[in-house]
Length: 173
Length: 237
Image (cartoon, rainbow over all chains, first blue to last red; front, top):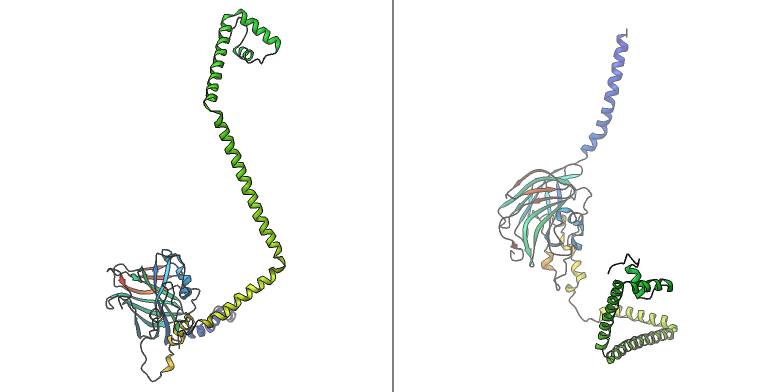
């Protein structure tokens, strides 16, 4: 029969074996999580792109940064892309910033928060009358990741197509 | 046509006899059988009659084509042959002229090419300066260099009330587009797009019935479709 003191020592050793890794993990991971300091503002760009079904499939130079998106199956039906307009926004935590495009659509962005690699944002889009609300969305995305909003049919310079807004935000100070 | 079992002469034997294709002893045997058998004689007579009809028809065709026609045909063939030979000879002569010319210029090839290259370089270097006065704003390079005005620094006016958004001057309106195919240069420095940029939708509210989310793991697109007619973006300004 085991001596009570020996038994308590074994229990203490087993407990230490279980708790030690947990302590190490918490020591390493907790500061890493704490490093995701709250982002107070972000710089955003919004590109309005007219995607048309007529064309040779060429992606213009000023939309080259969107090639990875525009070559996806999602855009396979479109054969030409035209940069219609581009806007820059500085957004702040919990404060809404808006831009109005020539199409009449108003796009609002608000910074909701962040983690270490992603930004949490709120996007809103109005109709072409600038009043009717078409969309309100909360989303999170990788820093500088692109979110697309397709805002329906549009026409520019006689070219009929679908108007897309490409939203891209990067954390600021 | 039938064979004669009594004489042992088959139709093939009779035809061979008629065509004079039998050996002498075989032909003699067939001849004796024909003499003895009226049916074989009748059949031989029919064969000769058929041959006469065929010969007469060919003679008639030959008579229908006058000899002058044959001469004409041969003349045309001769002329075609002569024409081909003449064309071939001319082609050979032309080739030989160029070959001789190329060979004659062989010593001057490299200096001539060097002179042509120098002329091209001279034209390329000199021509921009000879265009006369131009409005610098109309040059594509200067249009592309307007970029610094597009992104005002947030710290440039610390005392001023920060605007909620800073709209970049519209490049379509600012850049003159002499040709309809000219593409506007991007005034904003595009942000590098990360490898993984799938958006995660936490909450969404569509103001239209046709709203939907499309996410293929790489691209996230929120579709909203207004129900009214397409709008002319230029006119909407």
